[in-house]
Image (cartoon, rainbow, N blue to C red; front, side, top):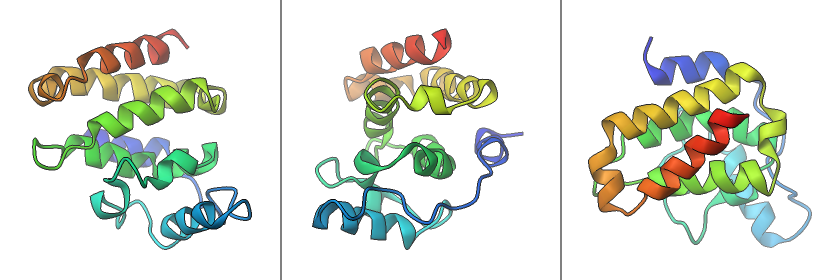
Length: 147
């Protein structure tokens, strides 16, 4: 089983009705609409590839789990030109620590994230290093391996 299929199996949850605190402000509403108007098959770098306007920064834990297979796909497909790994590392690090996403993940889900990070280290280390993200990856691995 490849990682994307495994992610879809482990994170096979119903699409939430909302993904953000959409009543908070216009930005939260716009990000919520972006996430509601897509799914794990259709969302891509066009919607998620701008670190300055990234709906995943506003997402709740259930929404993050729902969209994790799409984030896995973007990481696996990352190239020097279309690179998403840096944003993913931010989300799983910030989300794990500041939003307490770790508490929302069961053992199988946490193990999968650690497995994905190890896969990226083994298979994408050249572009990760070129983008100066090796330390971020190793830090994320430490967090997800210890939980």
